[in-house]
Image 1 (cartoon, one colour):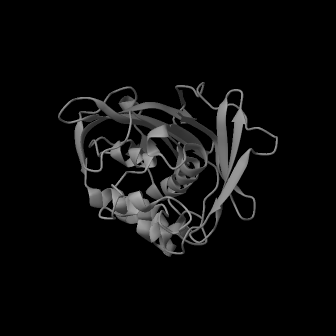
Image 2 (image 1 turned 120 degrees about the vertical axis):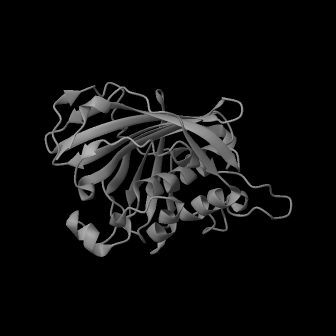
Image 3 (image 1 turned 90 degrees about the vertical axis):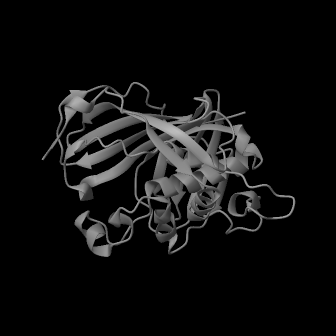
Amino acid sequence: MALDLGVIGVPSDPVRRTWTSKDALLYAVGVGAGQDPTLDELAYVTENSADTAQRVLPTFAVLATQARSGRSLGTFDPAMLVHAEQAFETAGLLPVDGDVQVRSTVTSMQDKGSGALVVTEATAVDSATGAVVASSRSSVFIRGESVGHAGDRSGDAAPMPTTAPDSKSTYATRAEQALLYRLSGDRNPLHSDPSFAARAGFSSPILHGLCTYGITGRALLHELCGSDPTRLLSMSGRFTKPVFPGQELTVWIWNTPDGIRFRATTSDDTVVLDRGTVVVR
């Protein structure tokens, strides 16, 4: 098995990506919106409530910029692949019904000793106007693969603060959270099939990294933006440990001279999303 270094730096052909009001609603429920009645989330989980127009969670941008390009990274055991990092940036409020063209580029493959880190950037533009709707950067870690060194990680976020956070909040996940989230498109059996999860070394199926990311994004939206999705412009973070459905997530936020930083932990203080940065208006 081997990864294909030839894909690095070669943009894909544009791929059409569409979504509907139902897709946006399903994503919101998949990342836990609507569970806590004290949070202002009705606009994300309904489309026909009085005096409440539907809106799209900012972290939906990671799905809006996903499209199958038809290219292959090479041959490897999919059970050895885990999501490592994720970032997005939006150009404004995401549309409830979207029609975009997505172009993606593998920007680097890096040897990490125990495996390879593959970084991909993608941009989604409106199919009718050509205006940028959202962009993303994601990386996956493929255990057991070796590629030499290609690219660098000079854009890594600075170390996390060691002081007490300026705020923190805790969000629940449901026992069936991964089964809900997978309906938004990621049908990887790592998140649903106990035997497949065992092959990857887990005691049971784990929560999708992007589900953890979306729940964390909800916390940032409410804590920093007054629940206004137009104010959350970008977000990035590094996945460090898996979350199991049913665990609680606590999101810690620091306001530093270099910007807003965050991390997410489970109830046993395990850090699951780290080196977080977020930009709000």
